[in-house]
Amino acid sequence: MEEKLITNKEKESIKEISKTEVQTNDLENPSIEGEIIEPKWKDDFCGCFNNIYPSMLCTIGTPIIYISQMHQKITNRPNTCRRNIMLFVIFNLIGMSVYYKSKFISNLILYSINIYFLALASHIRTKTREKYNIPGSVCEDACLTAVLTPCAIAQTGRTLYQYDKICDEQKSCTSG
Image (cartoon, rainbow, N blue to C red):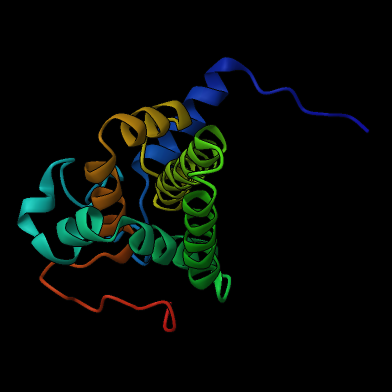
């Protein structure tokens, strides 16, 4: 089989075309006909004050549930939300129950489940960025999620659910 080699110039033109050509009927990135729009996040990084609920309150009050809902929506797998929440509850119960026997094991279990959800939030941010063709990198997603967790989760949720106002069609675990 012969493989066609792509030159650097061709790669650059492909990048430019994919960056600037947005189709009018593209549901992921709608645009006005003839207008060139570069894909971007729904709101600014600290735009959670424009949409206090569910964006900001869910991120601060119930981040595990919010992350689980987004994970189910981005993967489109049923019961993912319930599994993630149950995993969190079970690991926390185990971690707390062994606390007086071994503080080290308890802390290891509790920190492990929290690191898992932090990694999951970063993964969801990356998948959302890829779905909407938003420029960025996996490293950027991981760093933003690790350092500014609530802001990163809120921005991901606003982009993934595409809501503008309070309570715009926020879905529960049962309805995706």
